[in-house]
Length: 466
Image 1 (cartoon, rainbow, N blue to C red):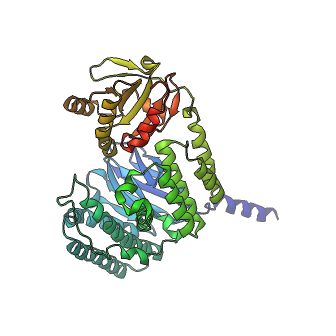
Image 2 (image 1 turned 180 degrees about the vertical axis):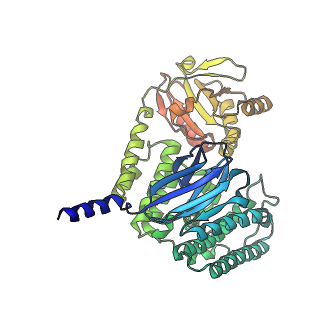
Image 3 (image 1 turned 90 degrees about the horizontal axis):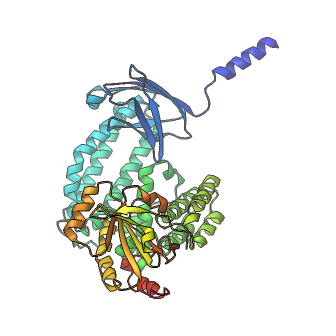
């Protein structure tokens, strides 16, 4: 009995945890002391030993594609539970030195070849977008055919490849194809990059959407597919008459309750997979809160708690809503003292007794730039009112802000966020507006935009002693 117990304990000690893989390797000529393994938003920093070797153990539930980054070089990796992988490469010449060892070495060699092929095709695909719809589809079909053939020939000459891996590659090719078709119209309406802004699409251009099986929880394992699926949902909302069937109105509605309502309705009416419902409701609601906070979205927060079964998502949302509490109506607005274009320091407290309308923006932010003409009209119309309009740049490149303000000479107060004060207002990125009352308290931590026109003016005109 004692011997049996000893053998049992030894087996327990030596046994590898379920779903765990070990990732080992050697990196030469690295300027960093670490490499980073990432998959979607999750990142693991792996320390390199002095001789460039490393060993890393991780648990994953399903096979997935990860990205390994080192010295701004990126390597796609296919990793799976219980299957170890060894990698060796020289940072100065990854393509020539990259080698793999392990049961998934063949799959990972394929990914590297595939990435190189895609890089060679990128300029051709960009040119393809500038062609007519018919030429675009012909070229796209040719590219997809080449990808399918390359995969088939590789599989034929490398017996024993993972069926899951091959299935995933075929699925990604198909969804990449969908993505390009979905992007074509938007490309030609983007005045900054399109050579021809207007393009007449065939009546059946989006008919392929009707043949796509969207209610498949297996898509959740692939970030690219999920991104394309999000674009498909967007197009289906527009096709169903949402926002008057106008894509432009859809894009301008980002962060609004109107868009959240359309998204929630579509997801709950068209998906049966609880996993997909959980994912998209969580994604849409978090996007809205990140942009404008939870205020005004209380109805959707309740629906989220009712519809989702993911307890981790519920907990994370609760924490996010609590994080915004100090920016609620009537709360003291976070104080700041920031430099204007002449280097003079300006404080929020300088405007006590006046309403303050703050525009968080950046020179690199397209939606921010589109608001400037409306903001200019608003500043002119309210210049004699009891309200101060302030644009606060969140540009890390201060010179870019100086250059633009010097060139355009806006006639309302311009400040630069040199102390990351935007974090106090939970501004992620740029393009948010805040309205503060005469006592320095928050009226709206995410106020109406200048482009909302009459809605904003009606709100401002309703303020006491404006």
